[in-house]
Length: 367
Image (cartoon, rainbow, N blue to C red; front, side, top):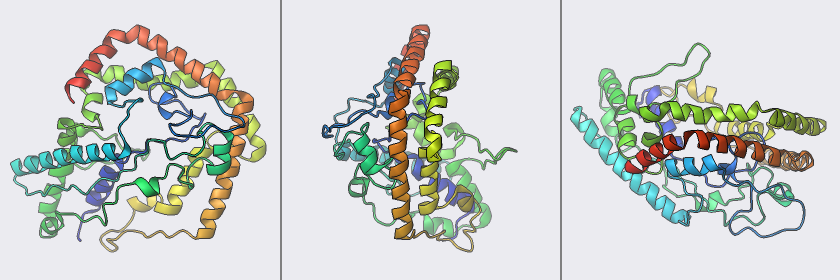
């Protein structure tokens, strides 16, 4: 299939945006977007078995976390099953694809709705056999990177081999026609800045696909989050992460954690580093994909990691996770981070309650 490189890259990004993993690895290496840690709860998951042995403090939602979850449409007490969430994703995607088809038609292009373009992995936590915040979890699953503790391999929706329903249309186009088609669908091409950083995706400038997300945000409430009238408030919410990181209590706790981890040859960013290693091992680096010659090799790079390499990775992952757990317990870093984050969140809510209420009201009106 003859596809422009930018078309292939953006298609992959669109699929990645829709991937959802409800189970998250507990880490003391960063606050969430609202300045708290609650959204990445490290507490005992539903269905997890009680175990003997040490556990870290259970991370619960802070006051701003709860409000932001409502704005984004994320319910921490959601009783929907993984299957129900998958069905909702399918429904939302169907509406967006039909909107894209109508939008493209208005611009003079044919577009066949692509209902097989999402990758979904949703877990309700019931697959866990031990609490996420326990040492036994670290001993058994490490950080949950290569070990699949949530059973994603068994619950992810099987859509079969992906096929682009519009392939025949695009293959028959001239280069000029294809470029016009791509721009109508995805928006004008963007370029990285002088530091190599790509601009954030703006649905308002992302062609018919972006317009579809604004019209039908569904589970991914981009329209509710990125609306101009709340942009300043949103920036302040994101900025709370930096406020928390610069708090002297957090700086001290981070330093103590790194000092404890140093004899093991790791630091507090080890989970992130191992995720990057795992990603490159199985899917390649961003640089590889960005520079791949899809015209000459349209199928893209192929990855088939050696089982021995995977086994070695898992062994290192578990050893590092156990060391991370022990040091987190010794330094009490999780409790310190949670206390600071909750304090910052409550101060922010007290100061901006009316604005947050207005944002939530607007978000609800778009759903």
